Image (tube, rainbow, N blue to C red):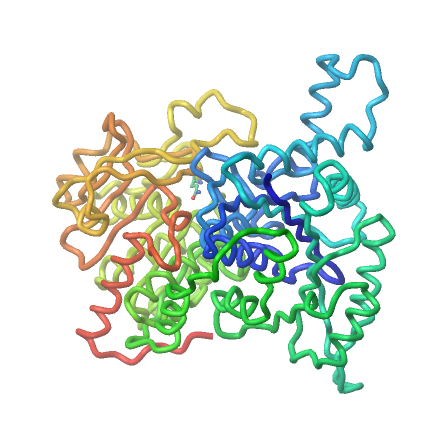
Length: 543
Ligand code: GLN
């Protein structure tokens, strides 16, 4: 029988529910359990695909092409839980499904209501992940207890324990224990209120994970346990991690959270095997190199907009025993200040994906700078399209070359709409999405990095390289290092004369893991370290 863990959050948002859920998943997996992970997002959008990165942060893409919340990225980086469309549900998706059933007449004349119809749909979404080959399903409820939007989800998970038996469910509540400087103490009242709200709707949490800046004293833990009606060993401290998010599972383990969970749910399991994680943290703490990478993007000021890219850079750093200092630079600033002032001194330049015209010329200038100064360059999705535009204008001699996304009347549309996109008008879920195969040129840097000639990576775009220009580009030294199996789409471009100039139409960052870095990130960081060693420069200051 599959056991269920529900993770809710209280007091404030941004407590790191996703990371905590992923860490729990990782600990249980390392104890030999088969885990599935899932997130419910209470907003009304059907998926985050149409939301601005300022609102939502990165859109994380799965193999099956679903556009999901970035917490699913944490799930994939920490666990081996297979993720699919069933791993992320929004209020919008749940209502859409119920309304479609109503239109088909499936409710046989009944009045369709939040309880039971919406809650049934939510429970069905949880049950989809259960099965004979699954020991534990971890379901994270987005938002904070008390939000109007969260109510149907909380009601559904309350009912869930009645359906499958209380002993098969465990409720974990992530909360904040703030430190009040003026009083010189930690405050437990917000947590008491948050748990009070949960209990009002009929959920008694089994475990409280307490985010805190300072260690929680035994007395405070006793107090929390008493007021929140949980045993003291279920009050788990999760102190802020200044060093690395990869410390979170180890600190939860130190607090014996996994022991408590397995005991409560009567899960047969062994002690977790955490050697790989200890090793990873050891490497993080004892770097042999230090390099600075500039990420030049439209949403650079937003920490979450390129989340998986920053993580993937770190993973490659771990493998090379290098500390990566990442400087986020807004491409518009490159337009204002010029690349020399902002980019000189970096060991590598990465231009990530994006949409919209703002800051495009800054990205193109940054790429020109990287190409001419022989600074390792990695372009991703829009970053690759900008690399193509830059090469067209400055090397092939195609003045005014552009993508038709930004200039419909360009004399040289070197990037244009994919054929399959030409008749699409809806915005949601209609791009070229998810895992696609590519074939690599065996002589390319990419093939060396992957140690393979056939790869599969995740996509999210509408535009592509315009094949009309292939020969001209080749004649000027660009290598089409990766193409779709039918050779109709360019997936990777490289400049073989350059120390490392690789740009890809896909999003390699989504498949990188802390203990298995994505090959192209690995290659890029390797090239950046090499450049630094050869030139022997001091690292630039990163703010
Ligand atoms: N805007 C570009 C396109 O749609 C690139 C998308 C991206 O970088 N994800 O093709």
